[in-house]
Image (cartoon, rainbow, N blue to C red; front, side, top):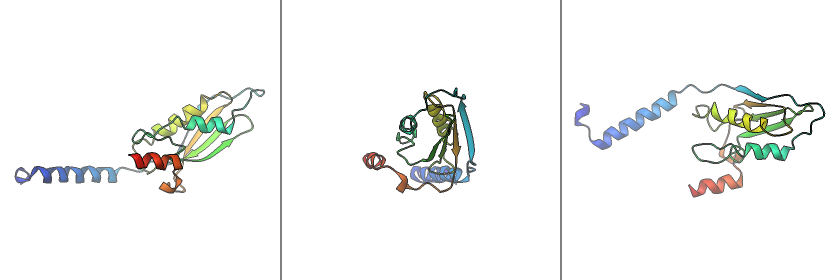
Length: 144
């Protein structure tokens, strides 16, 4: 029966199958990634602005907008010992870059002078919404 389908119907069927496969992907569970080493007690600590700039170097590979301006970073906590904890999310639990972006974020923060161990926690609450986009990200998306 498939041999009598039009090319357009075959494409529609292939797209439907692909969308079904994406829908069936198991959502990524919350997890944490740790990178870096403990700082000496007398070491200068990185500023929050430096940490934000480091996070801005990590971009979603599909739309090339950084994770901070996408609103994926929910919280940044600087501890007394120079360690940094970041809570972040993704646009969807089945995001294909679920393992990549949190690791890149941890690497970027841990590479800063004045940061000890960088811990990035992937969280799903609250769920990400487009309202979290920065004005710059909204402008960039409008151009796409």
